[in-house]
Length: 333
Image 1 (cartoon, helix red, strand yellow):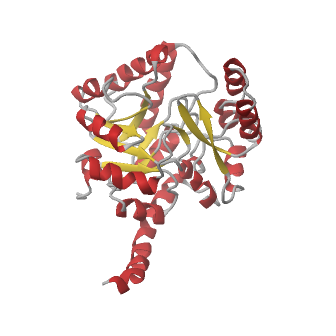
Image 2: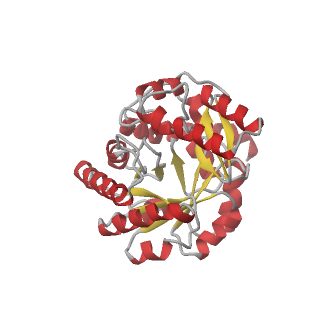
Image 3: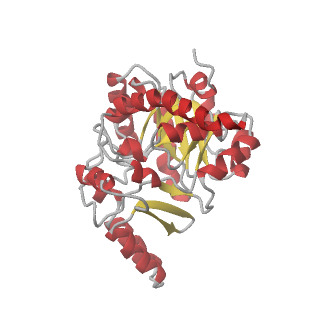
């Protein structure tokens, strides 16, 4: 058994967590990552064909996908619980109930306070990984009893807090602030990123965008190809009320920023977001005109591999990258 704290906590072979991605990380991707020794995590809408605002249907869709995952893997996996705020918590409450009823081993909790569901999940025997954006949030999560924290740097795709702490800066801050295991993400797309994360104090890594561009990902082929075609600074960070989102730079992000900077009304911006959402890109394939949440690691993605083969190749490459690092450091000792 590995001595790594994340591997021991989650009963997995490698401390690589596939980040949950809305409309992207469905049963096939989750199972492929878990079968390869990491932890696959189910995204909220991955596997759906349409958008629903029905709370019961939302929960039952998650239940159906959990059952599908169990047919594809015997290894641990996680389900994302987006806490939400106000009226939106009705969805997360239902998902928590389903996760407990289905005895899911791991919950990846994000966008909300760790005080909301941690006790309930842990009483059911579920390991709780909570996403944070500062060391202060990490301390509060630890005090709330979570099993591990996930810190996502400014480079990460998707929705984050308003801070601009990068993975390089935030990871050691969080590692110094808490005693529980630390998982870090944001810009990690290969073995070099894994090694860097470990050097910064992380126990495991959180990878989203790299797994988005794999054969098992539910991303539309047009989206996958758009990311493969991206280079260097191909993502942009956009403000969204109390949060920010990092997206692949396209016509959507340009129009959105024009609306935001021109002082367009909140209603106008919300209408634009809803009509150009990830459903329209990831599911329907409108890769140019709709939102694609994607991290800065996109510039390192040049192919669309099998997810399990990708994970195995990253693990295999760590040894040679570490040996190369030792050579570079030899003059220090």
